Image (tube, rainbow over all chains, first blue to last red; front, side, top):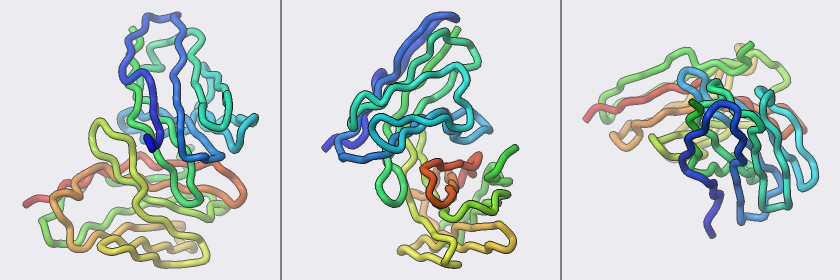
Length: 110
Length: 112
């Protein structure tokens, strides 16, 4: 039981490049989330998926797309990376109370 | 507009004493509140929660208090231990939604 896994752990991109952050959970949870954490801003919700086949925007969705590939996997895509997207990205999945977070992906956009 | 606010960026407490972390919210539709703890280079971990039908929930050394009229909640840690040193986030959600809105976090340092 690995919980929530995220790949990659660290990535450097150039402005305009694209990439997909992967997230998987093996706990059979319905809800999954993507957050970004920035200094002084806390954790901000980018997108979430209440169940397989559904996705909804969070607080800061601009510049991102998501795919809920199946119940296990929820990916986050940056189509054209910008320096403002430099952040630590966390994926999470929900139990009835609280969420289980992955270890994070640190992204640097130059 | 920040719906969940943690106005103290940092807090230092002596080991063995009480730590009180505060959180305010503006959205009266929030009815479920959670606290998370985060160590550096790790994801947040769930600590304790409270529903709006309660005003207190206790789990070992951790107690969360909710004052709905003031739209305020607090996390009490008694006694504080050096291992409690971390960043603490409060989060809130509304009934029937799956969206959790987080505060900006408070960095707690427990001094030995």
